[in-house]
Amino acid sequence: MRLRRLPRVLVIALVTVLMLAGCQTTPSTLPAAEPRPAAECRWPVGDWAPRALLAGAVAALEAEGFLIRHTDLALGLVSAERTRILPGYGDRYDRWDSRGMFGGIGIGGGRGGVSSGVMIGFGGVGSLTRDATELERVSLLAGDGEVRVSRDIQLIDWRGELAEARSASTADFCQRLRSAIQAGGVR
Image 1: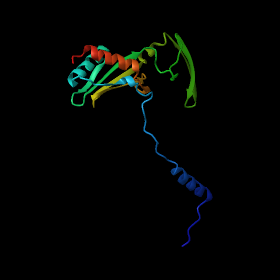
Image 2: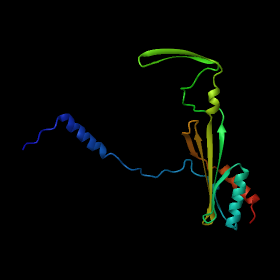
Image 3: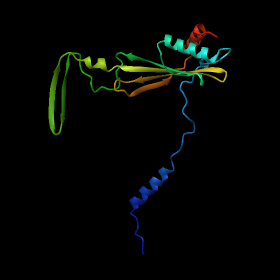
Image 4: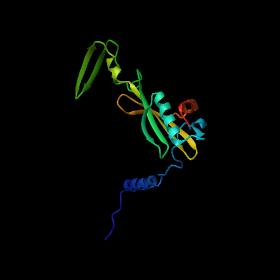
């Protein structure tokens, strides 16, 4: 029995697919926080009792407006978050709803027809419900003789989609938190 010859186009396509299949690689490094956490976000526990340290952290975070989400004394962990609305931020890349302050004119079409229209009234009211939300999360871990603080900020647009995310473990924030813990806590 004789095998049929494959058409030249099919052979070229098959060779191309096989070559591209070998081009997949895995990343050489794992993802890392950018920017890197500041050195001030790590400090020695010292002579603090774990319960007093975590109580001081809870008090300091609540004083800053954070809502405590989770604490675990055995792990030495406190997790907190706070949100705030960013008025007027909206979605800066989405222009589908742009219209004038007092109305707009539109021309469009679909399904073989052409349509036009005029909107009269006070525009821009829809943007009141299209503000973005900033979500800030903080985790404090006290273990192995040191305290480590991690903070990240996420920006969520009016549709609930993640617009931006970044590490925010800055020297200023960590120094303020450490000072508040030391000032309010009982050793």
